[in-house]
Amino acid sequence: MDKYEVDCLIIGGGVAGLAAAKFLSQEFDKTYLIERNNFLGMETSSRNSEVIHAGIYYKKNSLKSKLCLKGKHMLYEYLTEKNIDFNNCGKYIVATNQEESDSLEAIRLNAVECGLEDLTYEPNLKRLYPFLNVKNSIFSPSSGIFDSHEYFKALEKDFCDNKGTVLLGNECLEIEEANDRFEVKIKDLNNDLIYILQTKYLINAAGIFSAEIAKFIDKTRQFDIQYIKGEYYSYSGKEQINHLIYPVPGKLSLGLHATLDLGRGIKFGPSAVETKKLDYKVEEENKKDFLKSLQHYWPSIQANNLSPDYSGIRAKVRGSEDFNIEKLDCKNKIAINIIGYISPGLTSSLALGEKIIDLVKS
Ligand SMILES: Cc1cc2nc3c(=O)[nH]c(=O)nc-3n(C[C@H](O)[C@H](O)[C@H](O)COP(=O)(O)OP(=O)(O)OC[C@H]3O[C@@H](n4cnc5c(N)ncnc54)[C@H](O)[C@@H]3O)c2cc1C
Image (cartoon, rainbow, N blue to C red; front, side, top):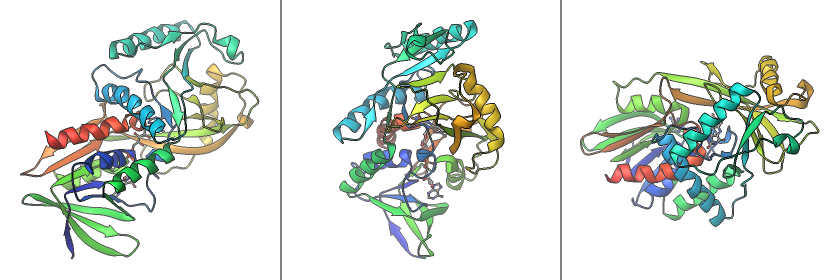
């Protein structure tokens, strides 16, 4: 089997792998990224809300909080610099009754504790959106939406401009340790060829499969992964919004929100249902519950206003609310596992890239 030596190898061409690749290629001469699909960013990175999160809900000093707050600023700057479309439209979190209004205050206080001081109360949201069922609301001015696909292209370009190499249609099959190198067995799916890349630095950014790759690196590792599917429906009713509208969050997710795309279309989602099946089909049998959750804050919506759109899957380490980013020092070589990288992973991505560089250098 042919063997080739590289300096640094990234497994996975979603937003985490691409952001890591952009930064790592500034440090290493021969940086390679493998992606088993024939295009980049086709899995979780294109199955989400494309929202730039403000950093409201996450626990103070958690990685989610730190990377989201920093990543948001880095992302807005990067999008501006690269001329990539975004809309800093802001978002309302709406409470429909007293109990939810009390939760709004807890949400605001948490945000302030994390250093996000720009949330304001808006008790008169009904003037703007009379069709919403709203008792009180909070406005977040730094939330927004963006064109994530153009963002991925820009990250790839930065990587390639730094002499990084992307290998599409290449799947990691196995990882072995050989003294001070990892030997990564790879299948080139388009040419039916198997070969080995040897590397001292290995980044596992395989998204919902990263716990499996972590097990390739260290056969003794076990992660209890909880898969939570989120479905989206597109909206075709007459009422329109110019902001993101979020309910008070639930246990498993931020709740079924109304989000805009850059063409002003409205979609609702994602739902949050634990699953063992890793498929992306939108199950129409869930539509009734989906509609009921929306009608809680947007009562006029009817079933015929909603068409099944797409879904995404969150792979969360059971019991952990944070991103799990771990560095393994293995006899003069380093592996970094990016596990449980769920929302706000798009927003946090540039800060994640910087963090990975820090981990590699430290
Ligand atoms: C429903 C939902 C809504 C979300 N909404 C938002 C949002 O609005 N804002 C926000 O900031 N974040 C959001 N997120 C989070 C964000 O989408 C994720 O954090 C991010 O996309 C994860 O990126 P990733 O690179 O880790 O994973 P992925 O995008 O899945 O990339 C992993 C890549 O690894 C590849 N791969 C896997 N195994 C192998 C292998 N063996 N060999 C080679 N390649 C392999 C896969 O093909 C894939 O392309 C949302 C997530 C979900 C699920």
